[in-house]
Length: 296
Image (cartoon, rainbow, N blue to C red; front, side, top):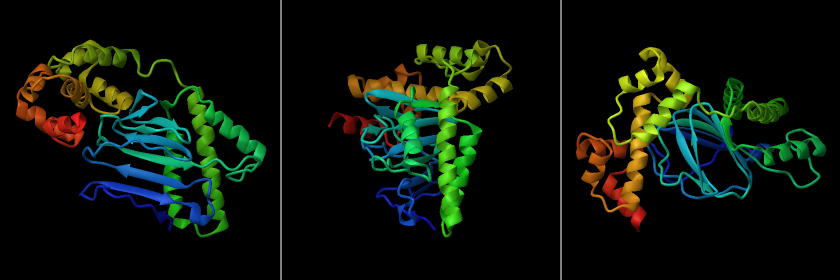
């Protein structure tokens, strides 16, 4: 079985799971880490950190924000995200949301050496393509999901040269498919109806924004709208509205002098108690504790 890499403070409560596996003891020095997590409620924010490897993420479900070079990236179900060796990244003021994802580290070999069973020239070409990606975040594919699933299954049976070869081949296939996904990226993140709805939500965060109103705006049947919104954005429309409201509330709490009750009312919550319950669900702590932490 692959060696489990442990980390202090990992969630242990029911419904949570996180695994990080070090594959270097098996001779897979180019794949120092394979990971997966499933969080059923928000966890503490990911603090600034970097790696001496490429980090490749695939969002299985839910949403997650990452901050890289002062730019925020919002991953939805099916999205990929890549950071380069030595780059600081974190989740900014956001917690690690209720979601699940895979991640993989690719460690560049010394100059002139091959990796993953490739020649030095092939390795250099592949890494160069990774270093010059036009986008850091882009939609993945079902093939990416399937490959990550196979990698996760393979980690427990790395006992023969054949299984190690499969791990290397699957990793090369993952990188090549990722480059193909990057090439297929369309300019618009969402379809026109969903873009129209998300833009409306952004402009009307202080309103109640009931789902029937969003259905009308999208000009779809309720069932088709909910299914399409969830497929493209990664979460149901009502949950997306709450997430955006909490994001805006965080800005008010951090940079303004509003009371917590005032923020709750401004963001359209029916009561400060409902606001505090919702805030804790998405941010992992109460509004007052979050504000104190950010103002230290």
